[in-house]
Structure formats: structure tokens, C-alpha cells
Image (cartoon, rainbow, N blue to C red):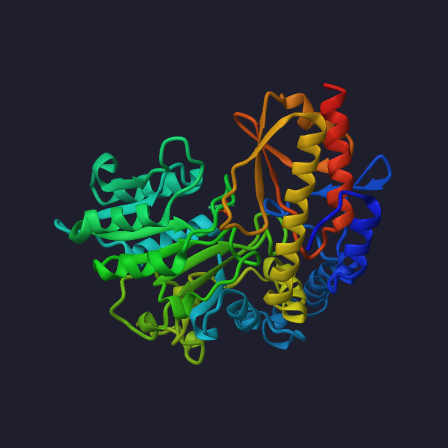
Length: 423
Ligand SMILES: *Cc1c(COP(=O)(O)O)cnc(C)c1O
């Protein structure tokens, strides 16, 4: 389709958008009385209007039933988490038994490393992308030190090539083969938080496994954004947060996937607690641990029901829409945003550089050569919520659930104004 950078054209795209009614399902913050143009669904997704009802339900049950709510609430708390597994499994392309919700993301990655990072004298190295999300870097270092190893030697980073802004799959695979028998674990962010690149999860997983390593994925920026087929791709494990594209609220609970071949086993090293034991006998308080036959075996504490409620509300929306329509709209809205950026670039003779490669999801990271932070401040004070990363990159993520094509057009006009006025 050939695009036009006009309000009429953008509005026509909105009219033809099968997901347009979902914008009404979300609350938008306001600046100067007007709804903002929201580009940070990759950081904290907007609040679905139905979330309040899910949370109120738990609050009311607690008020009226107190401890009895564990078994007698409308949605009993003791197995509340089980309601999330099936819809979430669809979002990540897994079997229901392979998915659970617990804790928060970095905590879960640590717990999964307990199971899947068991260095030996010969096989001990970890492969990740250079400049991984800081929390992941701290996690790798602390895990490696915990095992008494030297992070310098143990953690191997795949670099981008000089002058390039993205990683090449062949470079990742070459590194995997180079480390070979010393490689214990591959753990990469499935979608990079900085440049928005989508890694080839399938091929990298296959390469890692072919040298005998475990392969896991941090899917913080991938879940609810790109198509995932974790089970078919044979990933060993993955974890993600729920507050980015999954719209479940700040710091909320994390999802976990563990391949079915590791389920229902007692011999897997794992940090255990009572919520991982068979629910049929859990309250007999027996001394021996009988693992749940699914990913719930990794649960430790009883589930944080007040956190799960917003996640369940959000999953109801994902269930209703399904990933394919979201991905179809994502492709179109990101392509339109890219077009608008190029048009504005021509009009103002600025030099933007989109550093996101073609393997992308919802996010475009734009390098603003010669533009300062004041441009970002101008955008923010004019109702464009985006973020700024040093040295001068703005990340634009038009989440398909609630962003409109008109938003993209209006953003372009504001960007142009900001640059021309040299704010
Ligand atoms: C957002 C994000 C996190 C956040 O971790 P928390 O434990 O939820 O604070 C971790 N890793 C990546 C790649 C992220 O993008």
C-alpha cells in the first residue's frame, strides 16, 4: 500500500482498522486536556478499563470472605493462577502445562538459571548479546560469581559489527559453534529493548541445542508483540514481564515457560516451596516435595492474587483478539510510522536514522542526529509520551491494541514543529 502523510489518509486507515474499537478499552493519560500519543507501551502498557473490575472483585472477596476466599471466592485464590496459563500459553506458543505465572521477571530468570545453568569444569560459559538489558547483566554476573567462576571468562557477548546497529544471526550462531562444548547456556533478549530487533529465536535455539547447551529467552519485549512458538522452536525455558505489551500494571507478575520434557520430574534442581507441590496433597503439609506435573512446580510461594487480577483482565483482551490481528495491525502501523518519519525527514532536512532492523516488532528506535534532548522535552510537553536513551535515541512503540494511525500523523506534525522551531 502506498501511504500519504495526511490527516485524511491516517483517519481512513483508522476507519479500516478492525481493532479500532479496542482503543476505547484503555485509559489514556491527558496532557493539556487531550489524550496523549502513547509510544511507551514497550515500557508500561496502558491500563485496560476492565482491569478495575478484576481487582475490585478480589478486594470485595477479601472484604466479605476473608480467609474463606481461598476456596470460596467466585474465582478461588488458591488456584487463581491456573486461569492465566491457557490464554498465556496461546500468546507464547506453548502448551498450557508449560506456562505458569509467578514472582517477577528477573527473579524468575534467576530461578530458571538454578535449573538450567549448572556449570561444570568443562561446560560453563554463558552466551548473551552485548549490552543486554542491565538487569540481565547483573543477573549473569551474580550467578557466575555464585558458582565461584570469573565473569570475564564465563560470560561471552555477541557483538554487533562495526558501524552496524543490529546483531546478525550468523554471528550469533558462529559464536555458539566457536564456544561449542564449553557452552552451558544461551540466554538472550528475544526482542532487544534498545534497537527493537527481533532475534531469530528458532535458529538460535536450534544452534545452541546442537552444541549441547540449554537455551532460554528473556521475552520482556517480545510477549504480546511478536509471534512466538516456544514449544515448536524447542526453547528450554523463557520468562517475561506482564507490564510492557501485556498491559498488566507496574512491576506486575511474570510469566514463565518451561519445555514439557522437564515437567513432572523430581530430579531437576530447583528452588522449591509449597506452591510447587501437588495441589491434591499440598495442605496435608507432608515433608516430601511432590512436584506439580506442570510448570507450577517452579512456584514457591502462594500466588499474589492482587497482581494476577490485572494480568487476567489483560489476558481476556488477548484471548478476545488473538495475536494474528494484533501482529497484522502492528506491521501496518509501524510501517506507517516509518513512512511518516521519512516524510518529515525530507521536509525538514534533518537526519533521522532508524536503527531498528527489518526484523522488528512494534518498536522503532530513531537516532536523531544533531537533535538535542530539548526536542524530546518539546514532544513530552506537547503530549507525546516517548522515551529518551543516551546518546540521542528515541524509542517509538505504537502498541497495536490502542494506538491509532491518526496518532502517527499527529506525531509527525509535532516532530516537524519541534525541529523547525529548534526548541
Ligand atoms: C523490562 C525488562 C526487564 C525487567 O525486569 P524486572 O525484573 O521485571 O524488573 C528485564 N529484562 C528485559 C530484557 C527487559 O526489557
